[in-house]
Length: 108
Image (cartoon, rainbow, N blue to C red; front, top):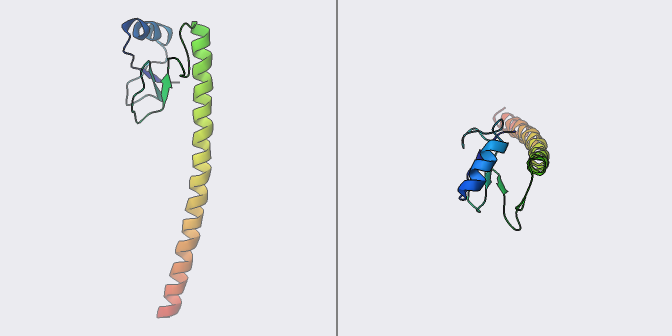
């Protein structure tokens, strides 16, 4: 698990940096972003706020548990994309083969 911590609240930022020192990563290298404010990001967002993924106050154990659940959900979602990508590639290859056969018959 690699997380980029980007909080407006300095106390929360420092707390998360302390709790997650072994999981901290740059914005480019992270699996997801942790923030206390909604933001647009190319990476998935773990939001710490009312109505977010985690609310204040929380313990280190609660934080780690929620982050592991969040990462597990991300992996399940990505594995669904991998299966869809494989199916699309197989369909595309089949389509390409049929087009080549048609062209060969026409030029044959």
